[in-house]
Structure formats: structure tokens, C-alpha cells
Image (cartoon, rainbow, N blue to C red; front, side):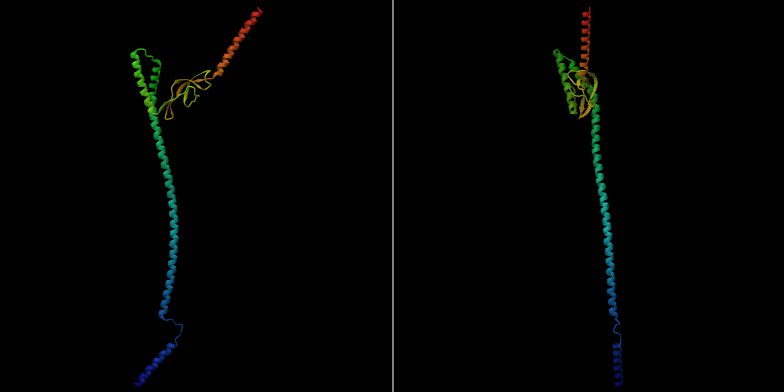
Length: 239
């Protein structure tokens, strides 16, 4: 009994001596696990940092692409808006032009009637009471017609004494004139009309040739007469 206890004590001492003889640099399993966890954690952090950098870089590139797309769409919108505004203005002008053309065609057909009214007014000279009553009725109808033309934007041209303009006038006759210079209108043969500032009908006019040619002709005739008189005087003296 005493010997067995002695053996146990010897075994324990032997274990202790074995443990003391172990190398100091041998790591325990716990230390190895902790060290592996730290290395794995560091690698994970490095991977996450790299992924974050890639994500930021991708987002920047995507943002730059979206900004370019936005600028392109903005330019397209501005261009389309300008085109639509031009189209709307062009449509408005076309509608106005079409309206003027339709009104011009109608009014041009009415103007000869107005001319006939004016000729009749100049020629008629009522003397009897019945003729005067008829003339007043005619004048009232003529005024109504003129008022309708004014409401439609029609205005007569005033041409006598104005310089001839082929855009407004049509020259029918040319004659010498002491009163007007050359290329000035002497007489209105048919009245012209404007419609909203545009020519509805050209005025038929008589244009002055100026006094120069007439004076020259008169001087030639005068010189001829004086020559004939001088010739006769010389003949009488010879006789």
C-alpha cells in the first residue's frame, strides 16, 4: 500500500518534469484559433474595403452616364419645344394668310360693284323730287356697302399727287404735265384698295411725264414760227 502511493507520487513528478521540459515556443490550440480568427478578420476587412471602392467607382461611372443622358434629353426637349413653337407660329401665319386670301377673293369680286356705284354717283344729277328721293336711297345703299368694306379691313388708296410705285399702282397712260413732276400720278382712273396693309387691288393711274418734254416741244415750235417770220421779212425786203 505504501509502495503504490509512492509510485503515484513518482508518476506525478515525472509528468511535471515532462511538462517543464517541453519547448517554450509551442503554441496552445487556443492561441492558434485566436490568431487564425484575427488573420481571417483582417482579410475580410481588406475584401470589404476593395468591394466598397469598386462599388463607389461603379456608382461614379453610373452617375456620370446618367448626367450625360440627362443633358442629352434636356437638349432634345429644348429642340423639340423650339420646333413646336415654330410650328405653332407657322400654323398661325398660314391660317391668317388663308383667311386673307379667302376674304381677298370675295372682296375682289365685290369691288366692281363699288366702282359702278361711284360712276353712277358722279353721273346722276337728280332734278325732280322723285329722282332726289331715289338718289338718297342709292346713297344710303352705297354707304352701307362702304361700311361693310371698312369693317373687313378694306381701305381705299389716295394716289393723286403721289409718286408712281409699281407695287401699288398700274400706269395706264403717261402725259406731259406742268403741275406734276415726272413719275408723279396725275389722275386716278380706277381706285385701288388695301386689305390689312396689303394690296387688294392696284390703282389704275395716269402718270406725268414732267414739263421738260412739253417745254422742249413748245420751244421748237416757237423757234420754227420765229424762223418762218424772219424768212418772210427777208423775202419782203428783197422784193
